[in-house]
Amino acid sequence: MAAKAEGSKVDCVIIEVDYSRDRPNDWKQVLRYARIRSRKLVLLARGGAADAFLADLRALSADNMDFPVRMYSGADVEEVAATERCATYEVRRLGDIVNLAAIR
Image (cartoon, rainbow, N blue to C red; front, side, top):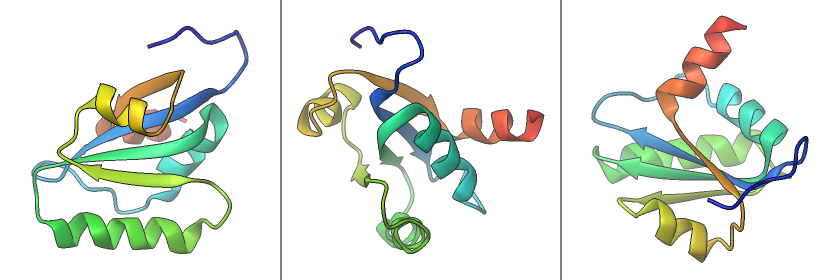
């Protein structure tokens, strides 16, 4: 990952979602986290059925018209970062975001 300047946003927040273990009830926490820290949200879906993550992508798109969101299934973090042209990026697991929101 490339270094980012202090106080600036990264190009992408890449969040790994393991559908065999966790799935958020409310994507607003994830969107809020990504909007504060980045210019684009990229979700990496692992495990689970395609219909589950497509439903989540539709829900995210319905709640959000002005912030870019992309979703990939089973892809590699570096490959996705290159595809999305993310010079700087932050990688998190979905559980990390949910835990951070619960602390606040």
